[in-house]
Length: 268
Image (cartoon, rainbow, N blue to C red; front, side):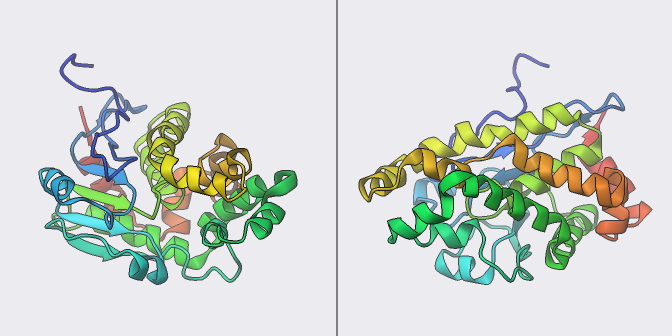
């Protein structure tokens, strides 16, 4: 790695856009590298300050992919960053409550405690990660995401959900696995969220603790854990045997699209 280039996964320091990083720089099994400056991940863009909005525009984004539900978007629409905005509701077909629904109930500490005690928080998250594979809306959303990246002139692009950790984390993991990045590097990239997101949530967490909800109880749903991504990767392999099988049979992508993705996102 050039001494002038940051290590892969290095946080891009924009105060009101935590968990922002470039997906580029990782080595692949074919001996190439994932291109830098083409694909970014982050939290929602609805809380950008004016100064930070200008910094994001300096990335030269052409496309922003938003994996949130309609309700999430209405509650905090993205700020305009000079890019085409594409909404892809990963969870449109969810029928039960997920982690986001639980976090919306922070004004009822007793309900939150009951939902998260005895390891229920971690199991709630693992269920949510199984939905990223099983929900038809998830397969449609991720299929469209990769189809858009492969066609036209979409990059540089940024993708996000609300906190940029689960729906966004799966999109990042799939992208890197498909490009041939070592699985352990994919896990390391995923877990960077704990260091890059949780400090930004400190004011919120302080308020929640003052309401009587301990941080350790919340940690499973506000952070990420290797077991969550292991759940999704394991189910993906069980159903589709490989990442290529998931891309073709699960997401409906053809060989031309897959070839275009590799060409656009890797370099010698």
